[in-house]
Amino acid sequence: TIRVNGTLLDGTQVLKIYVKQTESHSILVSWKVNSNVMTSNLKWSSATMKIDNPHITYTARVPVDVHEYNLTHLQPSTDYEVCLTVSNIHQQTQKSCVNVTTKNAAFALDITDQETSTALAAVMGSMFAVISLASVSVYVAKRFKRKNYHHSLKKYMQKT
Image (cartoon, rainbow, N blue to C red; front, side):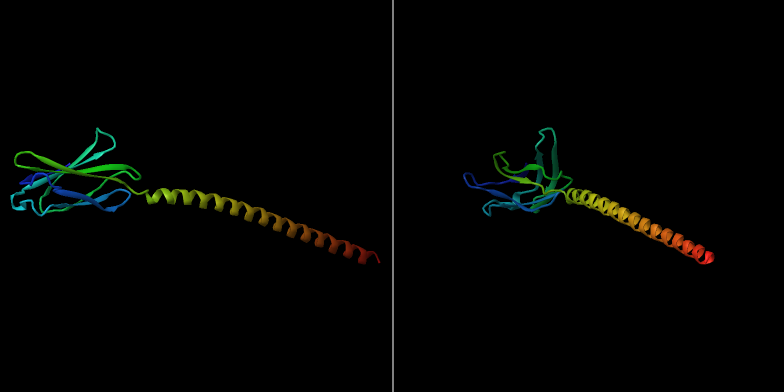
């Protein structure tokens, strides 16, 4: 709830709250107060963000001439309800709310990509090791065979 003390006109929509930007850990909200409201009488507003868990609230005091607020330290992929309440000196209130969901965390995608990349690297490394071992084995076998052939030829030549 964002509470603004001042004079209101009854029966009209005095305010409207908007989501300007959504990130994984923050929400930027803004609001418009009806021009018929005597803003010169407004002194302070307090902002309270209600999280899905009713035991957790976020409250901040902001000057009344501020018309946007950045709610930070939020959880990724989480639904939030942000409400703005404007009241007059007689404590008559009007309320505007908006539901918003924070974006997915970028690191969650990186972790998934990293797991895939790690698995791919492990498979490629294993294939490289097998091919290298096979190549070395073929080389050693040919070298051994050639060495033995050379000795056989040498022995044959000595006998004749």
